[in-house]
Image 1 (cartoon, each protein chain N blue to C red):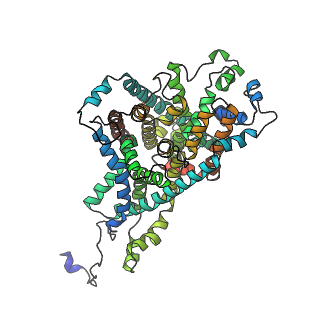
Image 2: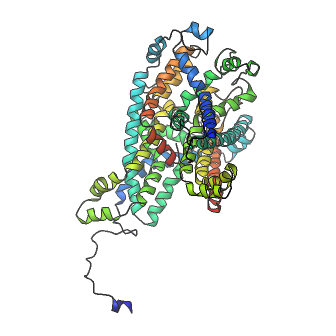
Image 3: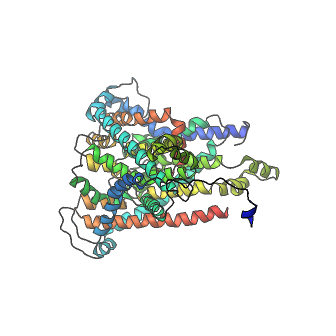
Length: 275
Length: 312
């Protein structure tokens, strides 16, 4: 990065801010829409709401059952991410530290899962989840996300553990700690940076995923936010103000979390490989 | 003999536990077992069954299925919807890879400067990445409203470009561009942060010495920044290619493949074949073609882009 603020820098600043304003136009259109009543929408589609009305928000929250959808999404996301961190880090510790041909093949097997599009197994998996009686359940979704996101999680953890020296755990093991104790007390705390990346990338992906919850949870009463929003928008498609309010409310929680944790989120995404 | 010369050492007791070749004491297999079990159940087993049923006439209901060889693939070659979807998928992928990464690079170069708004701008351009594609699609569906006094059309009218107003999603030749642009709007910030991480790794001294040697902005970008960005380019191109090839949510939310089949992709076609028409065997054949595309593109790209990295 060059230092100093020159006339050229000012020109660049103006250009970039103008780009951001254009970039935000859809967001402006949506947010102002959400604060307008139908009359205002028809007469002044792009002007600021005058006077602003918050009536649509209450109606949208109710009609889309966003409260319970947020709970469903939170439960599924948190449980899946915990399962991914535990299973992924344990497996990666094994793969990084056991230097046999078999464990290397196992590592490659996990990597295959990163390129394998889930569409290939989509239908047999649907059958399997159905046969196991897990359609429409939280457990089914948690199992699905854990399996589908494990390859990427194992990949991130293995690379990181390989860069750690083996001495720490050896010392603990020689002092009589079990493998699980050595992992839990010595290795796992050292994994914090990569655990942060794993947590952020998986949480954002799972929170926003649409297709599988639509398939597995549709009509179960346990739908996640994107599935509820999809049904809601398709039902009230011509009531722009209401739809806009629903979209604003549904997008708000993750945007607030992002604004609070922006540094970590951006770092997580820029160091990872897959969203 | 060196052994004679070396000083006496105290004998080391033999290790009690198995020592891995990396010098650590190897953890037991049990550590990998739960992950392997879940991975095999959710990904490996269904993918193998899926690949196998691409050669059957399975309807998806019940166990009845018979082997039909390559019939599903032959049918694919004569299925205008599937071929159109293949064309659309490739078109969307190329458009997204080029424009998203091009814009992402420009944004990264723009905020990797001393401008005062650089931190705020990073957050603004990145924010859509964390929002669900369903919601971004519905947002843009409103922006693309065909009414002359709403969304983008109203904005064009307001700035005196009313003659450019369009039915953005209803016009068959325009709809695919509109969908592509939605994806680009959402993901350009993702490319930007990966390029930014790459730019932060370019040593400042290289730029300074090149400036002393009289190199201009363009020359320095071509000969210093661009070659050193190779790893960021690799990651960005890979991510956007796989994202483009498997595009699904945005299509279902914005156009459902329409108008006609104008925006169908391989993912939407295999979904409709399975869950609307009940042709699971045929659907998995489409999925297998998609899987082969994704794998092939990944391998070619890794090979090509790695060679670029080492050449640089």
